[in-house]
Image (cartoon, helix red, strand yellow):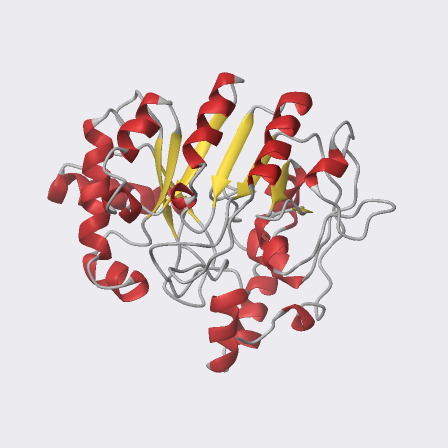
Length: 319
């Protein structure tokens, strides 16, 4: 695996500072039932990293004392964590809105037959990765049979009320290679038309995400001699107006060991949140602290969030 962090100082991303914290994004671990080329987490079936019960307890204390109203759960496949459902249930008891970053195929895994029903009963917002609406491109990027299982998962969610005005169901698109996503609004219309006509599948929103030049995808770019060209593309498409809406201003990312970062991408590059007196702060260090105005750790990969229409965990930043 090629390291990309040493290559992230060529352009010099503009300095940023945090606003009021709104979302706690928790990575429960890197175990996943898939192993995708574009995965910036480098997740897969052989990964064993999982958040401990002690760190999960810190998450719950932080949620309760910070009054944060959004818990964004990710992985890997976060649903494979043995205490995923307990975390969701306890967060919902605090009236916290929960988002599950779901790969769809996990809904078809043995032992997860009741997972979709649990998500619906808990009123969890599902944000599901489906990198294209065609079988050929999805299976090329994620593995043979993934598209068929993904459609089955979507139908299962639809049958429980997702995407029909009752429960939120969002899909996530990312390009197949080193290019920027197409306009989100138009692509969403294409997704809804194709999935609706072929399978009767409905959903609420499509989020377009740029591929980050880190971990598995970044290493592949280096191997193919495409890394510098992709970074030039991101830097050349940078738009200053996107700086106001980047997710790191209002989101806090927690890894499976409880260390905290300004975003999930910084987590994968081991760029910790800046906190006076702590080289690698943990979530427990932030209880009772106001992070407003805190400097954000930036490198050149941040251009992936500000290029073109912008990119974040909530999709494009600019209409």
